[in-house]
Image (cartoon, rainbow, N blue to C red):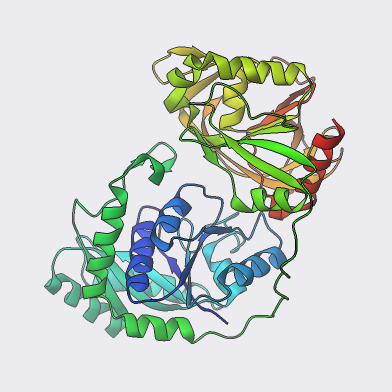
Length: 456
């Protein structure tokens, strides 16, 4: 069984991503094979972990995905590695609700029986850091903190003071620290961190963090904690076999404007018989030849609205594909691209594909959270009445003119209301909504989409 650790924190913005990626880089420099995972529904943080590990990072979301899917994915993807590092989501106990650990890092730690290392920001603190840790260490009878890495440390003396207080009051070992430095930060914007593909310099930051942690962290003690884990129930490793003959060719948008797609979605589509051909709505002037369907994933079309609008050849190609009844499935940013126009924060409108009526407008208010959806009609992913768990995260707003062609009914995931609201828009062979789906939640969605494209 692969050694494993979960890197958690008291809250978002504590430095989990930076320290997790830095630890990965430093351990790889010591010759270890490290597999990275990210708790929760996140597309951006995994790009940092992939950069650090040189391996695809996988999401493990204990609300969206069944328990069996999580444990199988963890074991399959960490097989043969020396260490699995899992970055938590938000604060350690934050998740789906406030009455239990559902969907939280804490729940994932218990599910995978993984030791928790808490990243603790201590700027302006000394003994007070111990009180914060004591609360997290004793909050849950089912979960204890196995170690601490201090962040935002002012000096070596500052680290020593915090360590003395923490270990005296909690007996939890302080494993290391990261000094406070304006150079050791990751840039952010409205959806969180800036994706790594937009910044050439981010590799140097991760390497510098790794080099710093290598001098201020007890890696031997860290690895001892990671190795002191019980064996998980085993699942048979997938047998290597010839892939099925591709039955459809799927054009999947992938560039700086459209990058939010879980790797498992692509893998499951491939296993179902799809040949994936990536294309760029930003730069290509035509869709790939002889395709049977199009997937427009989420991303940042609002940041590239001028370029997307100027690429009239691609706009025309997508309109022609819809007119020819080619299946087009879009999520979030893909939906925005299919509307008549995108209106940025300054109110500047840029014409888009126009397969959906109305304008998608950027706002100052974020829409985010888990969603339980029910398919309104038979569609490319789900039959009518089928339910699946997904999530939303966007600063844009688009309202269809009527509710005559919704994709989903939004159900109350907490079970407190029977009221149904509607989401998305479908017309002809175009299906679009703000809902992000992880196909491991229901792998049959991938097979259904491939069959839908073949039949259509």
